[in-house]
Picture: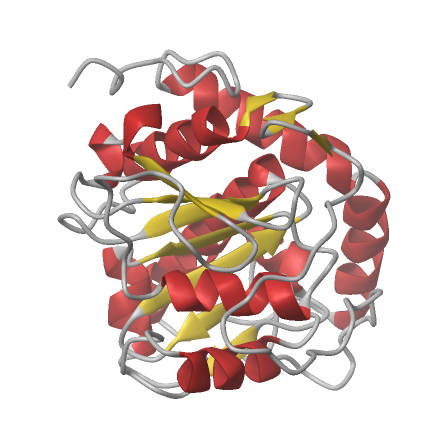
Length: 279
């Protein structure tokens, strides 16, 4: 989904850096994490598990695929492990990886595309959480190639400064492809991957998840409109006005979307409990 040259320019994240193997960059995101994998909204494994179930409730489940991760305070990360679908993820199914890439949770296996998460954290110190899912609407839309230029709905406005297009349908499952992906992502909040799915990034799990919900809906709106006619992009004046308003209230909007989505699955935001905990 490329955007017109007249799209407003929003602050971009740092330029991608070279990976040293698959080691993670150190540091925390926005000061929200503390030692022991705690964040302002709960433990990071609980936040990751809750986010997985929120995404499943939104229709982003795809068998046992898709994953969410969060950067740890020591530069490691917490990420959904191989096994359950997003709808059935509990804190026990969230793996912990040390800063040197070693697994701290024996008995859990990592998704191949954990390399994607590691690469994003290494390149983007502003990122505290990553979502990668395969919603049906997004997989369908990305088989068509990049979507027409423009911003077509309010759900797309958070991506008005740029939504990356990754033109490779293979898994981002090794360091070389992961490097290519982060170069493509640049400082954007999200990306569409050809015939594959979406990636969103945020300062924390709440933001990355809320952005994934918005991007899924934005692509779904596009597909629905394209099925019955020719969608028209928002006029530049309207887009500028919406961008100004949405960016000014971005943090509050992301938090509100996250809290409402958590309530929808019977979870207090970040407590790791809810509809999927006992399955």
